[in-house]
Image (cartoon, rainbow, N blue to C red; front, side):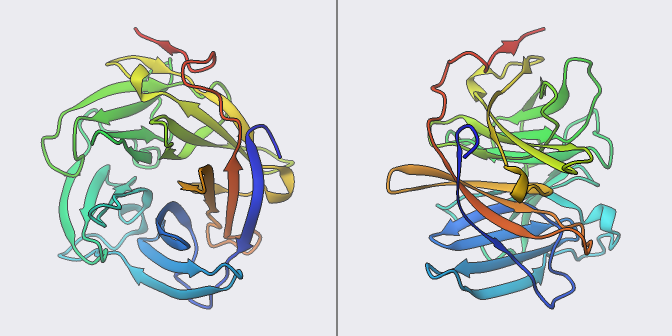
Length: 289
């Protein structure tokens, strides 16, 4: 256990399919049912049984068609949100600064829109996306550093995949935790942020923090309260996160991006979020400019 994170269980996932890997986003569709999106434009769905076996695994390309670019930079899915009521998913593409809404089968693009200007850099754009309970959506950039107070972020009044949806700009200061690699909504309405920091020993450090969307104002700079970090034996390049509640307890699942490198792993790990700080406690401050 580190901070509020208590390790529960985990898997190293492998597949003979060359398209498997590079996962940068994660959603939980139901008990034991996982949906993963990758930065090569493919997605996977699988079921983890209580005995630990993996069944019903499917690996399929997302619907990049109709003359869309086949370049990896234009198929780079870095964030995903899932609506259990409708079964629909939203994906954010970093290279093209777009958000798509997909049907429940992930076979058809229902709507898509570009993020409002100023445009984020192609390799530092939308990295984390959270659908809030009231229908708003927050999107955090990986490293759009057009402001000295923090990294650029957006809060949409509604569906970001619908052209013309209004959004406000704000900023996020990670306070040296690293760059945001994903986010997920917590049951109490706050946002869990996953940070990735590069180094030498270990190469990857993953630090989790909590931020309150009630603090978001136009031009405000938010900071988060650190709640823990992934312990060294499990250190890897975690880019996907999803939160679930089971038997009254809150859990976070993380998936790592192996970048299709032999020395990295695709890890799917679960932590219980124990003794989270209460909303409004010190460490979730904001700074309006």
